[in-house]
Picture 1 (cartoon, one colour):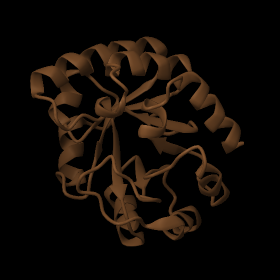
Picture 2 (cartoon, helix red, strand yellow; picture 1 turned 180 degrees about the horizontal axis):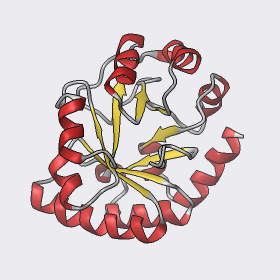
Picture 3 (cartoon, one colour; picture 1 turned 90 degrees about the vertical axis):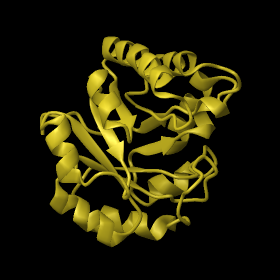
Picture 4 (cartoon, helix red, strand yellow; picture 1 turned 180 degrees about the vertical axis):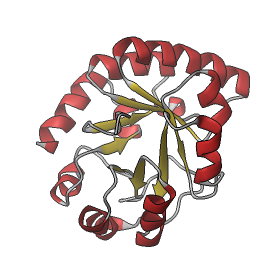
Length: 209
């Protein structure tokens, strides 16, 4: 596959309301400086103009650094800022429709919460899946119950797609997730809430090894 999909260890997401007063721009600069290679822009509560202006700046920063830039849910926004791809959920537009809209060269990631959804994702031709929520998480309002490590094990053993483990993953439980076979983990609050993002990412990487 020519698309560079999840060839990395830490998948970062923005979450400005958890970022201790720092802007997404400041936080993303720190993530990039710490060597993060995939960043997802995820802001549910801002209006479209704010999101556009912010995502445009982030696209510039990520492009200059060679970082893969994914937009959560918003296909229009991904297209207008020329993001590398979109991440969609089970209740968003169907994958084939999204593919028609964004084209073959863009990445589509899909959140999955069960073996059946993972199998369907393979058939639908997504580029990677999110596997979770592994543990309980408070960053999403409408999140389903944690699927635990069993579903992660199922994906490792049965699904031939790049995947990122997500949901309540922290420095103190990341080893459990890696032991079960995840090589890429997504984190929001654990990283954006950190006083020193660079140091936090370094510590997480040490635990993952």
